[in-house]
Length: 171
Image (cartoon, rainbow, N blue to C red; front, top):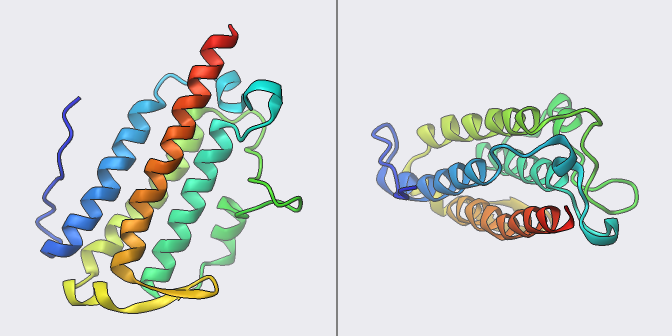
C-alpha cells in the first residue's frame, strides 16, 4: 500500500494538510479491517476484558462526529447523538455495537461521518484553524482539533491491530 497526503484542490493549504492526516488514517483504518468477521468484530480479547473492534470503531466515529460539529460550531443533533453515541455507556465503558452488525455496517456508518467532516473542511479557511472553540471543559483551536482526530485514530489503530492478533492466536 502506498501512503501519501492527498491534495484536495477545494481546500485551503493548511486545512488540506490537516484534513489529509485524518484522511490517510481513515483509509489505513479501513484497510486494516477489511474481511473482519462478525465474530471478530465482537471479540473482546483474552478474558473478554477489552473493547471489541466494533466498540472501538463506534467510539472513533462518535468522537469524530463530535469534533465535526465543534468545528462547525453547531450543536450535535439529537438524532445523530442517538445513532452514533453515547461516548460512554451507563457503566463508563465504550458502548456495545448492535448485535448482528457487520464490519460493513460499522464502517459505512463511520464513512458517513468522515464524508461530513470532509465537507466541513471544504468550507474552512486557513485563518479559522487558529480559532478557539470549546472542547469538553477546556478549549482548543480548530487546527488542534483536526490534528487530534488524526492522532486519536492512530492511537486506537494500535488497539485494533492487537485485537486482530489476539483473535488469530486464539484459533
